[in-house]
Length: 248
Image (cartoon, helix red, strand yellow):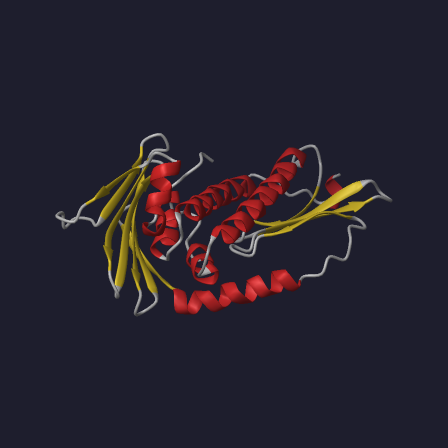
């Protein structure tokens, strides 16, 4: 994915000096409070409202436009994208994210043995595990894109897509860890909001969610990167052919 950077209110001065993004204050303009544009990256973001009740962000990224409104009192995200509107209840989603984060931290590495790949995405529940059955010189794969699962033996018909899927999962986990580390506060909230977004959600929506929940520019860009990888994983998963053992 192309690198994305969108400024948040918390990092405007830093962004102006480090990326050259244009920041426009609009105290006399009721349409937005602040606007941040970066023509090089093709990003435009507007903080349309930010008070004790609501934070509203409009983001244009990769030719997509999304409006994300965070209701601070009700702890709900309201998202407008491609003419559709939906809500994410953070009060319900945050505990799920916290449990998954705790489980991942407590996971014990039992060693490789015959396990070649073992990558798990706890945001969207995708995973890949591959087993080397060395006595018969065959590989078995268990994988999921977070919506469906597949178990298949590796053969010439699917080997390249299986290896691609494994690489995509490694990239996704690397990007997710970086995104979490880049958040100063509110990790569970931002992860919960992003994790609840559908796979069809645009990058602009995911960046908007992160910004509306207080993420700074760098973290918001990483969450957008992760969503792009997620979409690629979903697309590749659909094309992986399932091979039964008797077909080898």
